Length: 312
Image 1: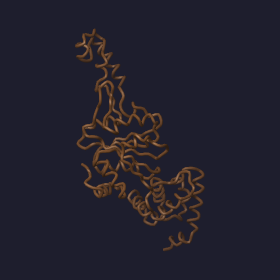
Image 2: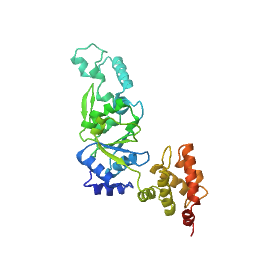
Image 3: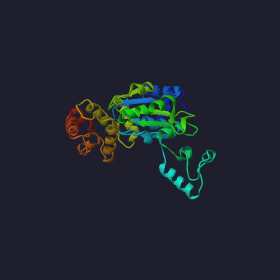
Image 4: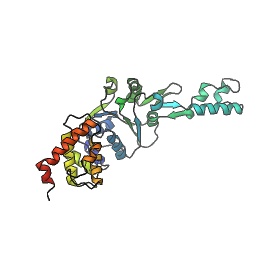
């Protein structure tokens, strides 16, 4: 299953409640059509991770996620050997005076002595997300989400070059494993650091902007279907204004959705409810930001436009 056009991308993602603009639709279409990884960058909370999840849902395929962090190693991302099983195999072979495979006999090795070829086989290989994506056997390639690649170390980026360029991983003991159907790869970054040019060259690129108030309202409407229209409209407009203030961490779509969901759960229908101030923690994540947002909210509640909104 694939997409026939950018419009098809937009339509099918819409069916799984993920709205995209023209730029995003084109980026996803080209990534699948020419078989290149797609690097999505943007501020936290604009829907980068959700894009990969929605893509997998729209294509009705498996989502494999690799969450990056500082210190991430090849053994955690690509593959590693199951040393416990290898040790158990050695002990069982010794107990039965047997060799693990025919290779030891062919090399005329004495009993109980095992070669690397006996121990380093696919039987003892533990697949991590990247190798799992390469060896996926389903009818549709999986979507591999390499999330927040900017949190990983520079050295880990270098480990990805072969995979991103050739859909392959080299295992010294077994050789190169190449995907029969290359996975659909989506990388995300919050730009906490600059990525290698070599990694960027291997990917298509798209920057996700925070959406307009109208599109943000539509996204929140899908995510919080029980919320009233006045609450959704005023909340998204307020968030749009707050993002222009001097904040340590500007609220994104994820925070907007959480805020509207919290207000809706408390029965609020607008931004003059008594519950508003007590829910600021859903959109302000530091003490300084809380003070700034609280002041902006007080101004909003005292404005004539806000008072007019509450009139029947």
